[in-house]
Amino acid sequence: MAQNIYDNPEFFAGYSQLPRQVHGLDGAPEWPAIRAMLPALPGKRVADLGCGFGWTSRWMRAQGAFSVLGLDLSQNMIARAKADTSDQAIEYRIADLDTLELPEAAFDLVYSALTFHYVEDFQRLARMIHKALVPGGDLVFTIEHPIFMAAAHPHWTVDEDGRKTWPVNGYSVEGERRTDWFARGVLKYHRTLSTTLNALIDAGFELRRVEEFAPTPEQIEKFPELAEELERPMMLLVSARKTETR
Image 1 (cartoon, rainbow, N blue to C red):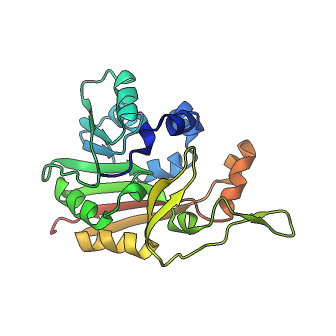
Image 2 (cartoon, helix red, strand yellow):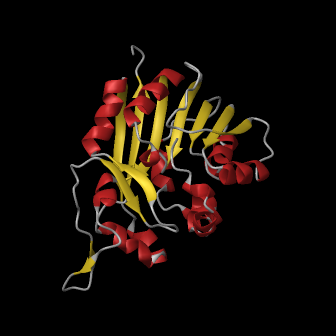
């Protein structure tokens, strides 16, 4: 079973104060880039893996999705999502992505935001998602960029210009990585960029678009702290499609 850090009271209290949790999608700088990667939503059956508070699940229904299944390991997340949702076409369930099995050809779109880096066996998950999609169905997801995960944060140094730098440690050494973020020992799984993309290709997906998110000048002007994200990519955004023949 995956580590359920989001039900740790100390972690959840800190996490709930992040701008993206207070303001929803408007508090996520990468949201416009993600939105541009999504297919047209009217009539789509969607699975939202790692749905959190349900911000995206509700947005997708507002854009015309036929139904949304939101899944998350955290009881805290699911409880909050249910409390904030009155739409009967959105269903929330507790589920562990390490063992999740979805019905075959049941979804037109599988979406996930900043969740797959908590999954130990991404190859298994990619194959399962491929089976759960109809031919021509889409997978759109974001993860913590492997370069960001491999950086020795928070052990940054300051260069002669006063800028923070993050040395990348053991990038090619895949596996468990632990960090202190709102709580000690948060467990994530580091995979290289090639491992992540090849897992999708091997599962039968056609890559549609890959973005290494960086904030725009306008975003940095509004939120100066985002300037740090120009030093190394923090997020990887991927769009893939299940081909008609596989």
